Length: 312
Image (cartoon, rainbow, N blue to C red; front, top):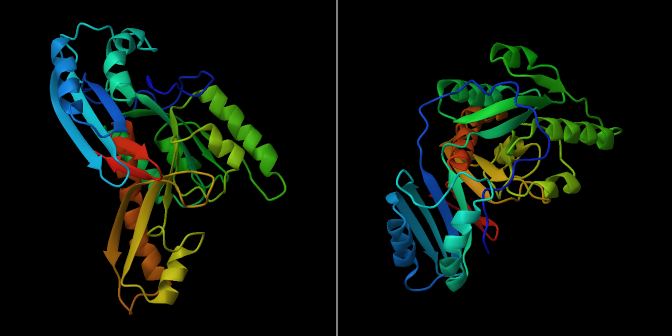
């Protein structure tokens, strides 16, 4: 099945954060492919790029024996490419690539590195993940635009002001969740993000909301999934006397803390550590793990199959 870049979310506003985090952008095209594993797929793709004037810069592939799937990421220089990649629907590329895609039953997506994705950040009171994302964005490590930060608390307004990014507070209680989510949806429609990041946003989004944006909401869980799900993983870990604690960044699905995992990391703890020690050590992990996952998503390095990911 042929696929171009996923469309941005509906709406339109290009204010706030779009000039920050600028860096020298690569001009490359990235082809992401998944299909049944079969002979000749790599050769056919390489030949296609060569015949149309492209120069392959990076090629990564993985064959999953259990599922029989083949996954591949090909990044190429389109400078001399003779297929038009300027139109959003990529109709010209699709027309030329379709014979190969149909032959090998490929699901595919083409992305351009020059396209700066728009990221809305959600945050509650904890600021460590938010600050890390905004710093990396300002320094150019995260090559995206941040049009808006949404929070259910006013606590991080000064941080948003420092980075000159609009900050909107949408108070959320157990009695107004529907109204709050409608307000959030209105903001999304207005600011048109490509994806969203929950940077320790301590609210559970409705299934209806989550299902509108598959593979476009990234969360950080302060625990090493699939162990210790829920709101107090460090307390659970302390009660079990674990020797390692971790953090997990994953795509959000209907099931709490159960989406496809993008990145994880761990740190060693001992019997001497209190719950507060675990929380302190865990915060360092959370911000690094989340920023890695966001960067890999921005760079089109993540392929999903089932409830798993391949990160090239």
